[in-house]
Amino acid sequence: MSSLSILKSLLAEVDDLENAFAMLEWDQATYMPSGSGESRAYQMATLQKIVHEKLTTDEVGHLLDDLNKEYAGVSIDDDDAALVRLTTRVYQRRTQIPARLVEETTRACSLAQEVWIKARAESNFAAFLPHLERIFDLKRQTAACFPGAQSVYDPLLDEFEAGGSAAQVRAMFEELKAAIVPLVQAIAARPPVSDEVLRRDYDEAQQMAVTSALIQQFGFDFNRGRQDKSAHPFCTSFGFDDVRVTTRTQRNYVVSCLMGSMHECGHALYDQGYPAQYFRTSLARGASLGVHESQSRLWENLVGRSRAFWDWYYPTFQAAFPATLRDVSLDNFYRALNRVQPSFIRVEADEVTYNLHILLRFEMEVALLDGSLAAKDAPEAWNAKFKAYFGLDVPDDRRGILQDTHWASGLIAYFPTYTIGNLLSVQLFEAATRANPAIPAGLARGEFAPLLAWLRTNVHQHGRKYLPGELIQRATGSPLSAKPYIAYLQQKYGALYGL
Ligand code: ZN
Image (cartoon, rainbow, N blue to C red; front, side, top):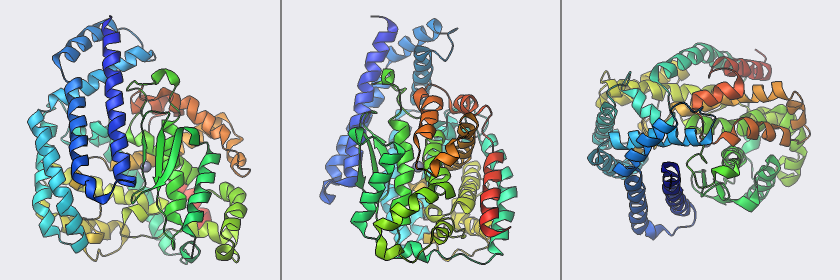
């Protein structure tokens, strides 16, 4: 057997194990009985350990040495060359960090999770403080395993956004901040919009039925997927012939289910779109978290919050909730859905203010990592930034620094991928429209196939073959940029708020 076939059969098994892990995780979030957590934690840890062992043997190192010589001159457009590059990156990352540090981090995070849940509920930062200190310390040690890095942030970001850097993220946020802070202020000076129509009584079974029908029209393939309920919506896949989305329903807030379904469907369309030849390989994944988020944001916002889409969809939606929406015009519904309102909680934020929440977290992470901010002073720093960006006084840490699970889960340098996804969603939608100018008008007739076809060709079919920067350049003709996103916000919300 050639080195390549040996590597491929090993990676196929790793792919099986990872998909089995994902299934255990999905079950835990959907149907697992509440008393089964302990045995499930063992099962998942064991699978993870086997994957790690399989990927970090000396044999894999030797195979990769051979293959990197063999494929040295081969273009990355070649699937095998791409697989060798990707596996080499994964191998280097996994072997660079000592097993002791990985274990310590896993243990610290599982302890921190439990403490964080309670600390958030009680708004008790002091209880969480030692865990926050510990996790940032472990992450600093992790970053130190990559001595060539430009900054302590970069190796951490690289795990989620291959090739990304703090410098690039900082430049992106500087540009956004300069445009968005004044936009938020201008909107705040206009008469407020009510979202009362979204908070009426919406039958929950009906919410599930309409969103299932809608995502099917977007292109979600129910022969290779399901939609279920979970406390926090997510999308996962057990191979691209089995892609699961979850959503949640709130009887008195239809946005959770409606927009959550569209969002997760965007992720799912990506995962259902990898080419057949990537079956059981590590190329059957998204290019990065940021690129994955661009897909969810595109369907949620560029499609699902657009006027064209609601011109088509509102009569169907209104008919599904006749008693609730009888007296609500399309105009009022559309305005409520696009209401801009500075608020404390990131996951409830509108399109305009959302990225300010991420900017704040990025600045906090950088300062906590480089030591310019001590963890004990973090709530004060958080609240001061919040006041500066949103004009609001944070009432308690529950609605401030304790709101997100990320830091307690060890996900440091993860937040910027949300903003990368937002920026890229607009760049991709514009590139699709340049290639096929009929796409926006088609939304007003419920025609989504042309948009999906463009995404399939330019994004989905490449799976994880290209680094995110390479994929973005190929698909849009330019590098990642904040400019199209800023122009999109200014135009859309300028019109909505009469600026
Ligand atoms: Zn998402």
